[in-house]
Amino acid sequence: MENQHTMRCTAPAQRRLNDTGPLGSIVDCLRVGFVILSIVVFSTWLSGCANKTPPLMKAIDRGDDAAFYTLLAKNPEHADRFKYGDYGRFECPLHLAASLGRTEYVAALLNTGVDANQLCWAHLTPLRYAGTYPFKKTEKDNYALIRLLLESGASTESLAFDWLNSEFYLKTAWGRTFTPRVLALWLEYGADLPLQTLLVYAAQVGDIEMVQVMLEAGADLDQRDEQGRSLYRIAADNNQQRMMFYLAQFD
Image (cartoon, rainbow, N blue to C red; front, side, top):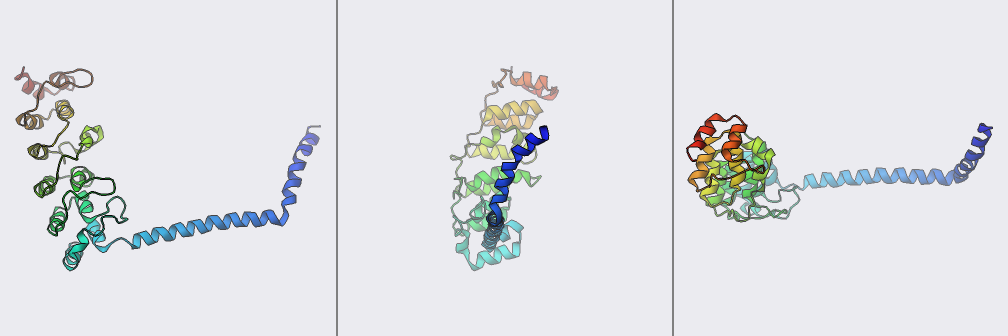
């Protein structure tokens, strides 16, 4: 009985499937063909984008000194030509060089007259890239590069320094690329840093030198974290005895 009911239910569906006949096969073939064509077109587009990458950008990306300086000497105007190009998020050579921490390249590009405050598609300056991106690629800080850009007229006013509020960044970069001398450099040029966040983190990890740098810049040690703990309490909760001893002298 159950089998008969199943046969009655599936029979109309089977008839509809059979009724499509050759037309259904043609439609299926067209669908498959469309998918294949889309893949081919997309692949061709990607290949075209890669081929459009300016040679100067390729040289910067690879760190090819010979190619970079040869290309720049031959066509110095190319240093500013690709401001609205399609090289991912780095649309001009200066941003790409800064993001990779290539100080010598940045200096050479600036010498051609490129604006140190040039904006990329995301309205970020080379200084923003210099301050954040290279920490993923190097164990040394970017002091020389940041100073070069600042001395070349790069402004800190447009920087929100939002990355310094990121716990991930602080854990990754603190003491490696975000060092006391980099912190002092930012403060020397009047950067509006989130000192509360930095003092709290310094107390947490026991970094006395960082606290000293901020004190010399006029920072207030009467800072508290989101739980209302003082810097001394934070140091105590993290068993940072040297920091506790250091902070005790300011009570």
